[in-house]
Image 1 (cartoon, rainbow, N blue to C red):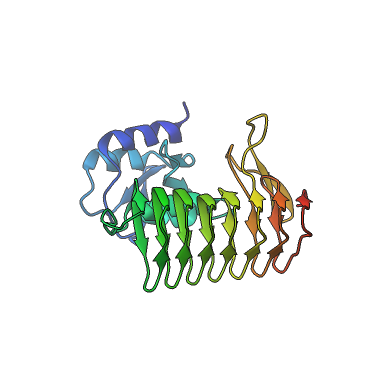
Image 2 (image 1 turned 45 degrees about the vertical axis):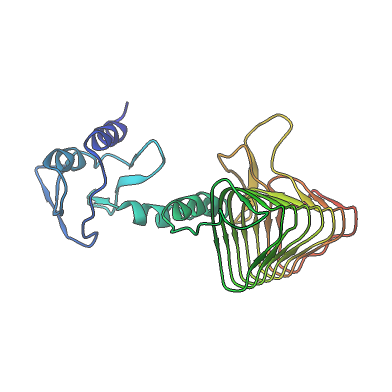
Length: 269
C-alpha cells in the first residue's frame, strides 16, 4: 500500500466529514510535513493529512481527500462537495453526481395519489401531471409542466427538465434528461444523458449493457476512454431526432442536431 492510500485509510478511520475553509493558506515545515488550518477537524486526521504529500488520496467511494498541488509539493484538501465538482471530467461523471445530489434532496409524499406507485422518492414541479399506472422505484425528479405515463416505469435516479413528456409504457433508468424532451410510446433509455429538445420515435431503445458484461468505453475529447462502468447508455446532444424503432448501442454519443432513420441501429461514435 502506498503512502497516499495508507493516509486515505487512516483519514477514513477518523471520519473525513469536517468542513473547513479550502482557501486557508498552508505552510511547509520539516520536508513533507504540511500544516493546514481546519475547523472541527480531529488532530489525528490532521496528522495523517500532513504525510499525504506523496500523491493523491481517495476514499473507497472515490471521494477526493487530498492531492499534491504545485511545484512545492504542498497538499490541498477538498471538502466532499468540492470533490464531487472536481471529478466532473467526463460526461458519465454526471450520472454519479446526480446520485449524490438526489441523496440530499427533500422529497414529497405521493403515497396518497391514486394509481401512482412510489417505492422510493418523487419530486415534481408546478403543473406536472402523472398518469395512473406509473411506478417509481428509486429517486425521480420531474421539473415544471411535465407529463408522465400512463404505465411508465422509472427506476434508479431519473431527472426530467421542464416540459418533458414521457409517454405510455416508457422505462427510464438512471437518466438525466433536458428541457422539452419527448420520450413517447414504448421506449427505453438506461444510464443515459439526454439533452434538451430531443425527440424519441416510438419504440426507441438506448441500450446500456454489453453481452459480455465488460467495461464500457466512450469517445470523449476525441479519444476512446474507459469509463469504469459496466452499464452505460448514450450521451445525446440537444435537438436530436431519433426515428421510430431506433436502437442506440451502449456508450455511443450523438452530437447536437443529429437525426436517425426509422429502424436504424446507431453504431457511431
